[in-house]
Length: 188
Image 1 (cartoon, rainbow, N blue to C red):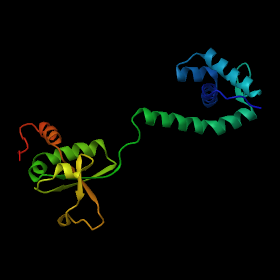
Image 2 (image 1 turned 180 degrees about the vertical axis):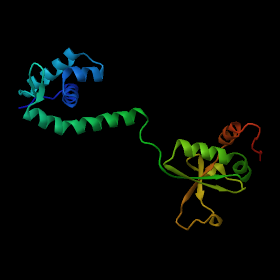
Image 3 (image 1 turned 90 degrees about the vertical axis):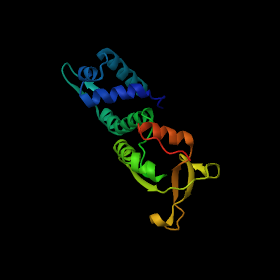
């Protein structure tokens, strides 16, 4: 019966197997050769089998070692990718973002802001609709940026109920206005 397998020892084993030796693996990982050797020996002891055939100059995987490396190498790589994705804040934004903005703001600033956004988030398709009308902020404060409402028919929307995100707070308008120096938004 197999005891719990130490994932760090398993990762060290895979590192040594991938690099073909303790010395090369130690140099690649920036760790000591003795530590890697000890960790692999601990893994072999816990599994009660040899994973490497050790010679004076040659280190070769045993049949069991090769099977373990083939079955666990991809799993450990996926764990590393998952940890990296979580550490970087998760998946990249993607999909479609619809924004409704006042006409003047769109003419003055939206082009630059949309271009910067598109460069930062290439997997997001940005759709901007412009019109000058007042938005009832408290009644519409449900979506991203505040208000959510149906797209106006004149912009080609269907009756499918697609929502449109609108800047819906004075703070948001001011922060966007501050980014466009010299072009403050008109106050209503």
